[in-house]
Length: 131
Image (cartoon, rainbow, N blue to C red):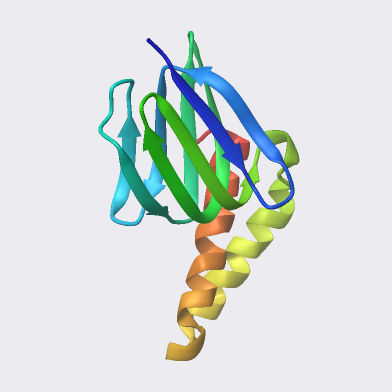
């Protein structure tokens, strides 16, 4: 028994695959989805979406969105979904460093925006470097 995973962004369909397992960043923590999972709709946060198929594992950096689990279908609607080959590691490291510096002096009004940029940079680096 497998799951059908579909990941789409406003620009394109990023993934459509039969998978054994999906792990994604939910609003209250990471969610693990296996075949036979209960129906679910949840907000997603910025982080790493991982899926396993056969013996292999693949990851995407995602930024905000929704997930729906219905039957054995997992549908992800994300603002952004990037595969390892699409990520500029140097730019992501620079963005992470910049966001970390800005957090030191952030006001309440800018804190959430800076934190989101930091989380996205960290997710991109995790996907691109496999760590």
